[in-house]
Image (cartoon, rainbow over all chains, first blue to last red):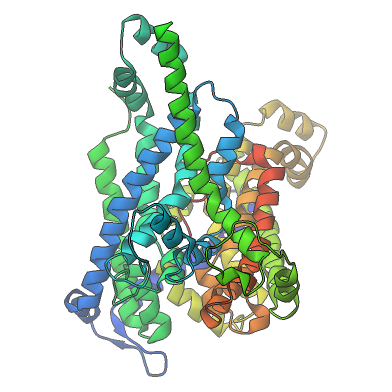
Length: 286
Length: 279
């Protein structure tokens, strides 16, 4: 490695070590300690991890995280793919449709969450008004304040924001599929559904796999939308690992305990990613 | 004839679904804009009206004068722009070396950078918080800019690496024969040719800095140092029913990302990695 190479790399490596590598190992270390900022750090072994597994709120948070992930990821993919396929034909106003569906993607999570909080408002929210007018519901629903609907309402917001991102990526993927494949299938008398099943899906498989993995990482680590919409409430109905972790860290200043949750979350994210890769195989179509 | 009408019907259904979807996507925005032009009584009128009866810009005036949204806007702008510049400088230096040089340990180093894409920022938030606190950067711009820069490096380096390695070797050789130094080659030959890549990472870094919530919530504390997302969320927490003022703030906060998107649409390459991983 010559001198200029080192100099070119140095700024990146320094920033990376300070704000990524060092904190990662420090979190790992803290997860085995008891520390509430004011006192001393004391090593307590795996007690934080044991506490976590017997903490009923953590168990709820973990369950909600898994529900949130297993609902939002596939639903976003299905809608995104569906719209991408519709837009990937001769359609008037294609660019306009694309921009509209992409609008929620470029809007920040904070803005999106606050917009939906206004839409969900139990008294003045437009959603209740529209649904009552349409006769779907009889009386106002307290979407975010009712433990039975809160998680569902939060997931709707995530799906609404994510569809456009999926659409754009699938659209790019669809455009790489050679058209003569479809023509050949048409000549052979393949129906629309057959063409979708035997051409589109296999050829898009690598894209679908990558999108699934990325969305899963994102969903397991969701925070901002939940923090703003419900802050994990009501009665922990929307508590996820991240909101509980953040509360423990910066609300109760239990740095040791929340570090254990952080390590757990990282380990879970990594293992689910590895499992997904294993399950899907290499991503190359047969 | 039958076949044609079937095709027409199919097209009509496709358009209907697309339009219905578009309405669902765009209505929340229209409703927000509409609310922001209503006065504080009309907003609670029943039944609600899409077009305000007495449109007013009072909410925008108040948002910028009484609520320090102007200040938060400037904070966000400073932080997002500075982060963008830092990332462009640091990532293009490193991306150039990864794209065009061979050295021992190159692959390992690159993998180590990329590995951090898998590590959510919540995992390292406590040590980073302690670090920023101990070096006295709490409630400062640098306390936001430096970590943001670091967290955006991996992806930026990865994207730029490909742009740099695609530049023909002949150009570099010619410059070397003309007696250019390494730095001159980088500045005069490589950087101009990697412009599209730099634009791409610049855009997503700016949007990241504009949107980031969790870290800014953690390390800013005074009202004058809040960024726009934090300011708006905390304002809502304090004045739960001030929807007219808040929606004006939301509209203001959404303008920069939309302007960036419209201006640089062609650089929004549908990059698989960008945008979804780190939040």
